[in-house]
Image (cartoon, rainbow, N blue to C red; front, side, top):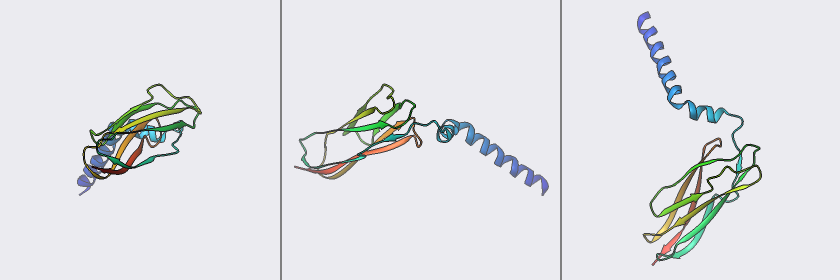
Length: 136
């Protein structure tokens, strides 16, 4: 019985150690007090009603609220009809980065498209979104 208990403890310690080993960068990023703080005045843009032949372009502004530089690592959309581009250079305190999003509709109806912004912030991911209605 004592051996089973010792083996169980050993397995738990190994699992925790492996988890930390593979997730250490994410854990350290969350625990780092020097993470950049951001302000986004508009995380959701409602474009209203558009025709299926229209294209929506919108720019989100991400303001750096920290003394550390803001670095946007990546921006991804949840479908091929939405593409995004972003400021690649580090953004100094008080300045803003741009996240430019283009939505090209491919079906009619009410839609919501999300764009995931990854940066040196805690948490490291921020969701930006567009919504509206596409008509013929």
